[in-house]
Image 1 (tube, one colour):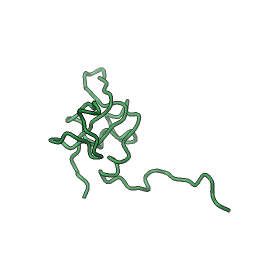
Image 2: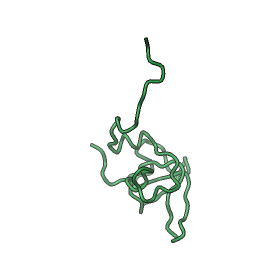
Image 3: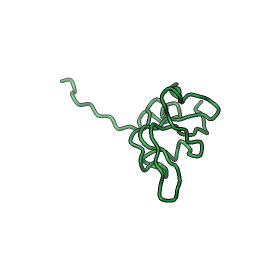
Image 4: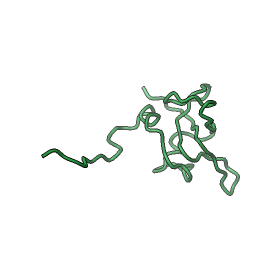
Length: 97
């Protein structure tokens, strides 16, 4: 079962004009109280910034309000949070005859 209340850890951060600290770069799902992301990346060794005030759903570039500077979402963390496999469009580039 996927966790419901995950925060965000990211490779970079930025501050909006209102002074709100938000994630940027590659974002991972992070469960508070642990020292690793949902996909197993250690926060301290990977030098990820923690954002306990930003929910995982708010860091999604398609729907999130805090995703202005997010460039990439960890696919393993997204799968761990319950994202469906079919949500990413897939096409065959070289079909067999």
